[in-house]
Length: 208
Image (cartoon, rainbow, N blue to C red; front, side, top):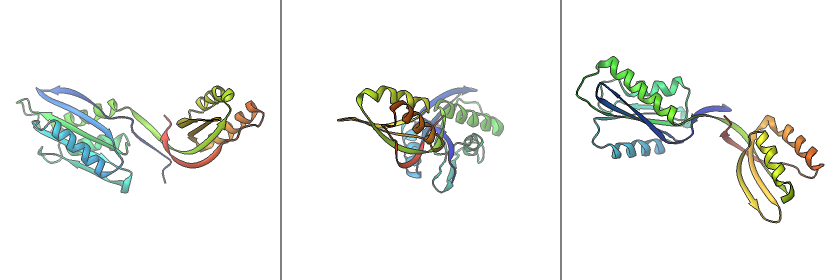
């Protein structure tokens, strides 16, 4: 199993004009075919009056790759959009490039370049990130140590998943597995051995 992959952080869009045709590239992080289909339908509904809504997506789920030309000549639209995702090695990403025809034909080469560009600016606007397989931990500390804990967690770029404030502070966080020993060593050193981190699972989390 891969322990790292690239995806986009957020739903976003960007646009450009080519020979009076308006191209709008939309991107969305997705996990399943149902989520990808829902996003494509949402963009098609938003731009029901567009000439074409070309789409492509790549999923970790069963290594699925799909694309649609949505009426453009075969191979000039959906495939170029998908190729951008594959070349960038992006996973769990769906892109829709909407086109409003401006009256000037672009030709096969022009369409390929335009849809490739629409896909590229879409994924760039969505902020490409790296997801890594991380270990999930909990640690409970006194309120007086909470600020120092936050500094420690920040030093290993931990993702804070949850913080519970009760008699003490219980923090659930995730980090790369290889950082566990370093973090525990620093925690032991700074708390005189008072606190221990407790592993409760693993998940993919943003690391870059």
